[in-house]
Length: 76
Image 1 (spheres, helix red, strand yellow):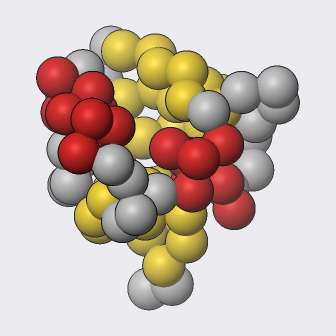
Image 2: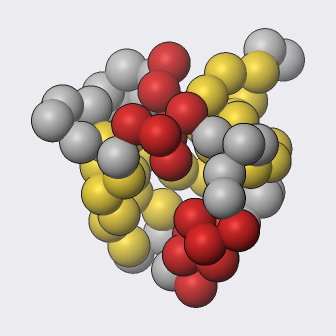
């Protein structure tokens, strides 16, 4: 499977989080406090002006810097 960042995904694509890379400790804390962890499956709902992700019953808006730091794998 190929590895991408959330920033490389298109609207409507789904992927599984592999890891967080290059995110500050504060950014990492924010993601985990919101329930976003490696192994979660997410769907990209929007890419502009911010990234909006859905995971489970939650929708989360992220800036480009945080979206770049979430590494994912595309899975069917």
